[in-house]
Image (cartoon, rainbow, N blue to C red; front, side, top):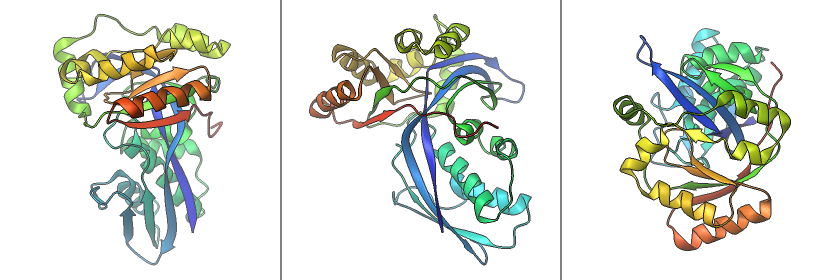
Length: 288
């Protein structure tokens, strides 16, 4: 029996460069892992894949990325056994935090360990990319520039440890819907990825905070004004910066200290019905 973790991610930037012939969008974004994580207990079985989840309404079959990741490893390496898994969810679902991708990445690592395959992280990334664009990042963690459809990764210096508040409104946003509406709308402002990468290398938290930019934010806010309201509340309470992560709807606020993050979270808990988390950035998991 082993236990593996899958960490959530936020986007420090997200730019959409256009639609690709394969139907995906070409993106350029800086992604950052955070300490908020799901855990998966895994043990070998003689056959079949069994998955149970702490959230009973989530699918626990081939519709779940964690199940599909285990199945992919079984088929690719012709494993003669199965796996029993229990997933404890902490990362909100359909929140722009890559919770499903984090779970799939954790299962790929876990199957590699359980069956003694000795596969390098890059091999797992190639496998993971066939299931979802965020999975390679979730395998490597830390701070990375992602291009292509999100699977081409360039390692950056780890962002200096920064505390943050995550605010998940009581709603879900479809990634496909956000990108479709972006195609129709576009964005007036695009992120300066080169400059934010430079500031990350310098370790300047305030400069990084000043360069946050997500072109999908205006798309999602247009339909869900509550996102804008939560951003404003965090800034009023002293966050260095606040932005929506991914296609939303989760909003995060970067802070100068854990104390400030806890104070902001307390105000939001008193004045909203959102799910609130205090967490911090984390560094790379592997040098591969």
